[in-house]
Amino acid sequence: MTQLLKPLNSTHPEQLPDLSTPLRRKEQLEILLCQKVQTGEDISSCMKALQYCKQEETKQDQLQKMWTEVVKERSVFNSLQRVAITVFAILGMIAVFNGAFKSKNPSPAVIVPSGIHQK
Image (cartoon, rainbow, N blue to C red; front, side, top):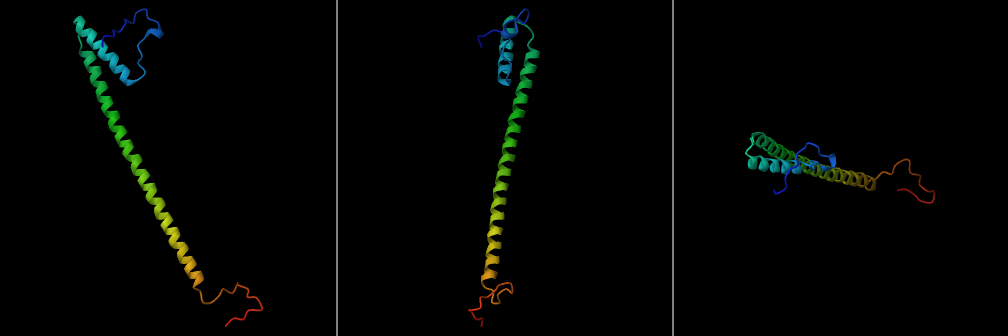
C-alpha cells in the first residue's frame, strides 16, 4: 500500500494505473482511500466505491457457484441418460435375438437347400 496514485493531470496513457481487472481496480481504490485519509479529505465516495466492489464480487462468487452446480447437474443427467439408453438398447437386442433363436417355425423367406429335409 506504499504505492501512491499519480494525479491524472498531464499523464500519458501508458502511465495510467492498470484497471483491467476488478482486483486491480479494488487495489487502486484502497490506495486512493489511504491517500485521502493521509491528506484529511472526505473518504465517503471511496468507501461507497469499495462497498460496491465488494457487493459485485459477492454476486460474481454466487453466480459462479450456481453455474458450477448447473454444469454438474447437466453432466450427471447426461451420464444417466447414456446409461439408460445403453441398457434399453441391450435389452432390445436380447429380446430380438432371443425371439430369433427360439423360433420353432422358420421364416418362409428362408430358402432350405434341397439336400436337407424338414421334419
